[in-house]
Amino acid sequence: MRVITYGTFDTLHYGHILLLERAKALGDYLIVAISSDDFNETKGKKAHFDYEARKKFLESLRCVDLIIPEHNWEQKRDDVVTHKVDLFTMGDDWAGKFDFLSDLCKVHYLPRTPTISSTLIRENLPK
Ligand code: C2G
Image (cartoon, rainbow, N blue to C red; front, side, top):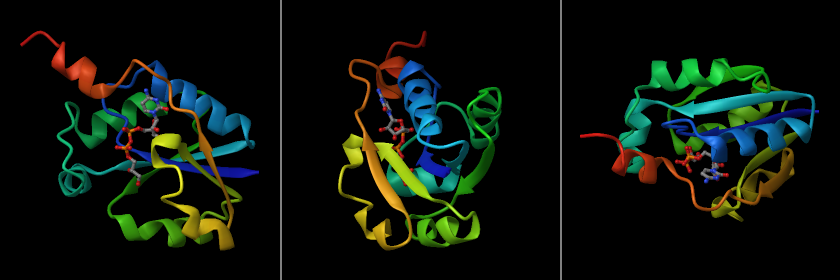
């Protein structure tokens, strides 16, 4: 079962890792689409680490099989078809937002890990 998930994954932390490990456990091949720096601007997010660094951190995770860039909101349907995805998953802060994919693949939202976020980490990095 081929699984895909999307995100910025800035300041990689255990909330992300728990999400990615649960996503992988839903299948046997995990594709992660990492938001490009330009797309982060569109999302109104300023990541602490640039795309290459965020990609490098994710490449070090055993549960990640393939990394692709996320350039826009519109690419998900093409990604699901191109990469023969069986299941799309995201944290439940996005619950319902991607149900439009359900004619192409399963859609499953995973409980978000509370009390940790990249924003919290960024705000507590030494200035
Ligand atoms: N996440 C989590 N627990 C946290 C923080 C994040 O489970 N404490 C999950 C989010 O729900 C998301 C993934 O980790 O599924 C990546 O989180 P972000 O990097 O914040 O991704 P986001 O900016 O929400 O981008 O097209 C979708 C967007 O690219 C999602």
